[in-house]
Image (cartoon, rainbow, N blue to C red):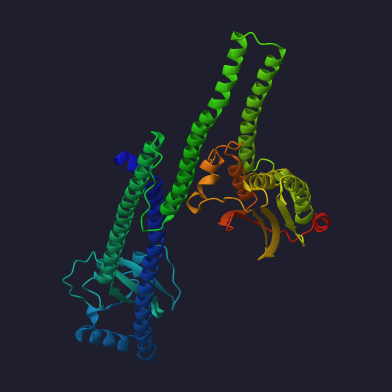
Length: 479
């Protein structure tokens, strides 16, 4: 489990984020620390400069005596606990060389330096300089400003920076703790995120395994978070539902196909077997051959219908689609079926007045309307009425085919679109139950809809197709 957690992308990204964030935080906090140290040093140097300037003003006004008196006064009023003062000649002690060896100053020049405290307060007893009694350890750091006066006098003003450096050290320790804490929390967060992702992936993997085993009813878990996993699971569930539907449809088609082909194949086998057993004359052989050919034609029609449905559902030849003018397309079919209806004693009415263009496959659409009109002719009794009409609404062409036959019960209007489905009233008529399946497949492939309604009496078939606003000439000009 631990190894799988480390191998998750979420944990690796969290680790990278923790490293990058820690480095950025270290850089930012280090800059703040460095800037704070520089500001503290600048303030210290500014205080030392102010003290030195005040002493130099006394020196310039009253020479060395006034300066000595002021420094003695500073030592006695307690101010020296914050500042260190020293005045001596270079012949007694060269502080410049002790603080910065090799440094040469001109009269009036000064230098800043950070040195151990004992460097600046250890003064020989036989000099006239100020003596300091300190109880602190002399190796503590001190910030000093050393200025060279005329006659080789040196004036030194310093201050103890131990507390300031201790403060900076405490700040640096806090910074290190914060960096370690940030890195640790980032790793812990990465582990939690990795565990959460691993849990979700294991759920998906387990569900996928059950689906692989054959249980197509399983679905991916969808939570209320609506995150990317939920959106992916929703898409996968939709895909699985479609696959399950297709598998069920395939099983149903296989069962129905086996059932519907068994009868003509059995009849074909029986006829051939009889022709072998019985001593038939030429006319009898011709009769057997004619009936065998009829059975074979029924089988071929069944397979052709299935192939047409597969072609419609797959959209294999969509690149061959073209704009179809509705009025001449419908008029051609109406002219053909009006002749057939007249022979059957059926009134056929065509109410196509205006026209529009739809995009589609001419052959598939012709086969669709032919199936619908064949059904209307098949179930409309003599003296009945078949009407073909069109109207336009909301950028759609609505084509209606109505008849005065027995119609379809309301609870069967969805069932009749399934493959090999035939109602009891149609059992005695020729057909294989694939006509309306092909019709729906073609209509849906053309982004249309089909609806069955009661015509009182009879059936009303309503087809809707999207209208193309560009005519063939416009398409040719824009192309």
